[in-house]
Length: 208
Image 1: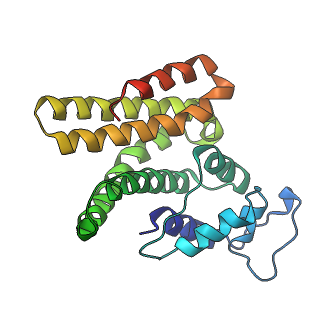
Image 2 (image 1 turned 30 degrees about the vertical axis):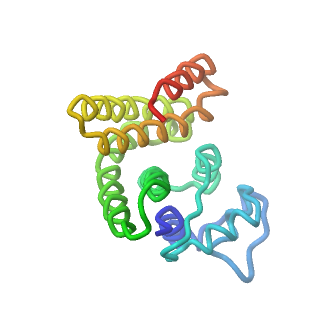
């Protein structure tokens, strides 16, 4: 399932009549929904991969954390839209991890886990975004630190599951923690490089 692509498409549809003249880009005549991504700018092949993943059961395509942050900032997405995109990105990252380690006939299980995780992330991330909405929403450092806090909670959950000999659960939460940390590092490099190195060390200490 192209969870992130579907969510991004939904957000772009909601903004298809927005005025992007402040980005000094010409109006799109043939593709008004996806054209704003070219103004970020995002390369055409990346946009094409995301378009192909929309509502496609066997395709996935994502933006990295820095590019997603820039897209939200330049296209002026709402805080709730940002939360939806982040939740979809994290859930899909876990889905990729699971698919690479499970049998093809277990795809339905992965889909169910991904859907459940997506909803759980939405519920947990929305209050965070509410606290940092407004001007600080586009502050990559503060946002990254907030997600690092949540990644720490996920790492704790992984350790607890490991102590209880629930290996599959431990791997699941460990991967989610690693993904959250990895997404945060690029946002920290400019604003808090010393913390970026600490987070990188945390990533290295997580089980593979």
